[in-house]
Image (tube, rainbow, N blue to C red; front, side, top):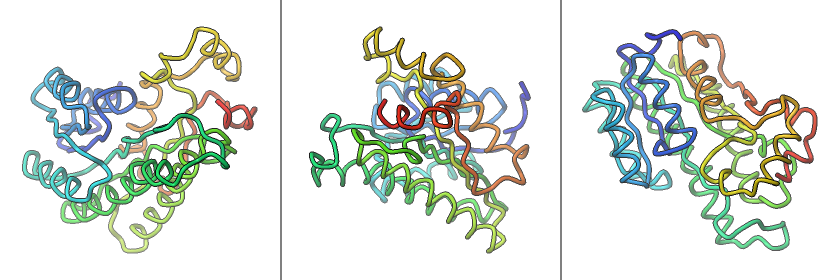
Length: 260
């Protein structure tokens, strides 16, 4: 592992109390960075930051609330003197269970999009403002392969992640044309061993693994490695891109990817 790619750099990782967010925070700290972890789960988030040591801090954060974004970004700059990397990972999948297009409610649609789409927009907005004074930075948005395939049982989720992909392209282009030196890219995870995934039955997990060309579901660490690459100077010529971390699932079997 390259241990110093984030030396003297400060990052914010949302949804960092568990899963992909936690693995990403761990990776950035391991590579020499300072990280502000945010989440609604105060207990798990605080424990994670304490475990990571003095390079990490935690703040309770509702990603759908602009005032929270203003506070979190200000806290990062106050503690670490700058903001170099934002990882927009916080998100929700289902609030009222799996719903088809004719069953989805407006309340479900609005709440999922408030976190997954509006939350990412707010993060990009305030990160850009904070990154400009220090000469630029990198934004990595966590979308999903559900953004690119039909998601008949996850209508708000798929639509919200498609919005993240479109926003990523727009932020990337706008920052480039303005000369901000701020890159913006998206990661599209497939089936990942998160807390939600672990609630599935053994039969479901086996079926999911069989459907992936590489023969297994992904780990949060698989995604974290891709995030760290895009956030680092190793990806200095990459912006507006979408990288699928899905074991080949969406390419080979897109309809199954949308139904899982």
